[in-house]
Image (cartoon, rainbow, N blue to C red):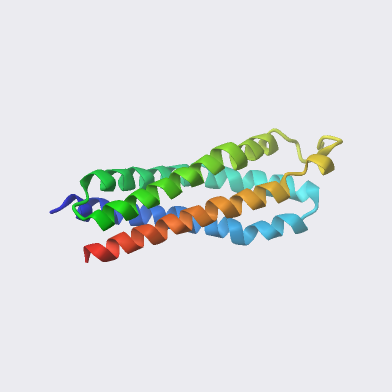
Length: 154
């Protein structure tokens, strides 16, 4: 069995889980803007604790499989699509680590019953939603590249 046949299923699975998880958060994020601040902070804290262990593993697993596909693929088109997917995933992970995770960490330190006096000025909802859309689009684009690569292997 060729390495493409071994690596593509987990790439599709992990990439689908990552894109799906981010798509869910993109679709649910507008709810954040409608919540009063005292409700938003605990809701965000609760969701992050459930997504945080799951999303990095999904993204990194897919990235690993795509990087391995770049090295192992026999066809140039499959190699190119896997490289594109890996690059898109690396960008999604970079957005996560540099934009969304710092916001998540700051919100995790807050007590919803005693928010900082300047919370309204520092309210991160708009920024978090914007960057979440960016990383979601990158993960979906990576999944599309992987699906296209898989179609070439059939």
